Image (cartoon, rainbow, N blue to C red; front, side, top):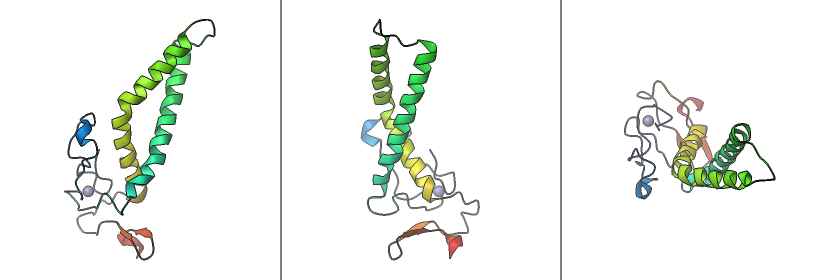
Length: 137
Ligand SMILES: [Zn+2]
């Protein structure tokens, strides 16, 4: 998972999301281009929505796969196996989903900049309350 601005710098200091003590350990800035990751105080609260959307999408995908491959019936326990499998997959993938939602959330605000060495990093403007790119001024 790379920095959205330069697509080179790593966003997490530990590559394994299942190392739960370090699941959110990120450098303050991108080591490659200097982009600030947590752009304002509480920036990561918005990732809750992304994480929720990802989880719902995953549940729908599991349901469709189960319906096509195994099928549903009211006469046996397959529906409970589906629920159990769904919960298991969600729990196992949760650390990865949490990271993915941080990355996707930052991608909403920070666009890829091929000239990142010459331009300034995107930052939050506390006076106007907007995320300003170097090109918009
Ligand atoms: Zn970067």
